[in-house]
Length: 369
Image (cartoon, rainbow, N blue to C red; front, top):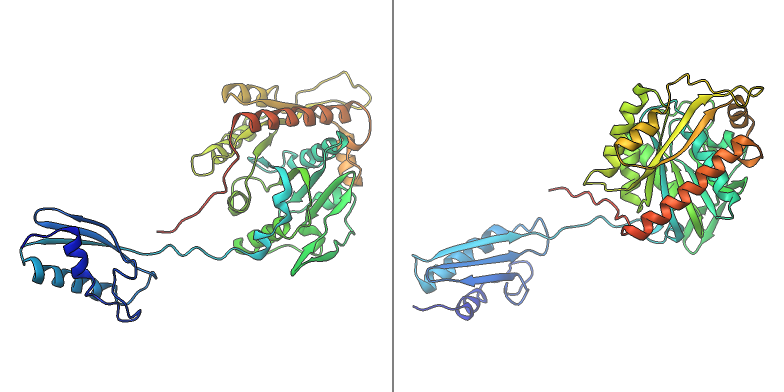
């Protein structure tokens, strides 16, 4: 008996789905049908991933075709199951973070390099340019930004927008900021498993009433962790800034951080490196430089990896004092403030170049097979 696509389709119209009560053709389950001399191939598109009748429908289809056409005909059937994506949180769907123009991660390969100090002073310097700026303290286990911005005792207010409860960021020195430090006792150690920490970050991002911002900086914990992966899954990150000291032991970890962001699966542009504690300068001898951690380590690494060196920040006592007192040096005047002003201008420039030359970063989609 000769057979065509129409012949096979008519045969399969006799196969009914026991639960759905209609034939598999009418239900749209028949896809990609091909008919050759002695071979029939098609896809059965199931309507749910755990359809208990999938196997019996497949067997019934083979039997019906072979009984009608001949037992020597080869029948190949592929089962296609639907991809059930988890429902997005209403906070994520309606998040005010969508109004942020540029989201910039501030990261470091290792701890102790002054990443948070750079993040705070960079954000303050950016605000001084007239830009609207936000800052999220994503260092969940060691939140320090409330103290650095002089807002340790602040209690963010909860506001309602429609059916959503949003957290109003605290603002000081022209920077809107949120930190887990506002919601926990500063004397308590945060003994949290990974999911608890990542959920806290999601809340800071999506439940923050950020409004329209030119820049939102995310101060990440040192190294590479669940927090970093959660960030690139939750939002489209414009670019990353890597902070390091000049010493070789710190630079070795910087390479890992660059590799993580620029890897194929994440693909977040690295805007450049910041060399912190580039040299020590005594307050009373501002022209003297002592390279106690080595000289130009970040500069050489940036050249080698063809990345911009965004700035070199000296190690000066007043930077530490500003962090402890809640008055960042970038908010004042002087040589140190000028260093962060120059850093801010270079970051603005690199963000503009990145946005002109590259498409927007896509959120990382994690699929499970």
